[in-house]
Length: 95
Image (cartoon, rainbow, N blue to C red):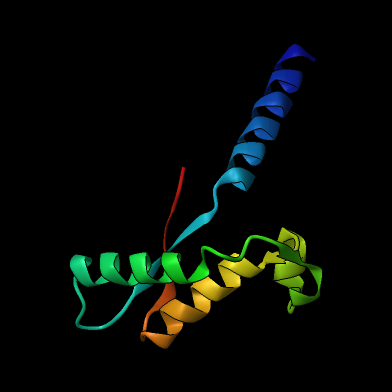
């Protein structure tokens, strides 16, 4: 019985750790370099800095509902980056 309990505990721990690993996303733009990304981020951080409230009505999809309400600041930042031609791309999971 002890061996089975140990196996169950190890399996549960492994599943819990796996659930915590989220895919990493990064901003990408064809033909751009790290300096252009840094400049775009600075520009969009300035543009979005005046927005800090949470807007509950901005929950568009089921996946965003699972994460909670979107902040106006992050929405403005995302729109700014996209307007400059940047897009989010999934990378390797973070650990």
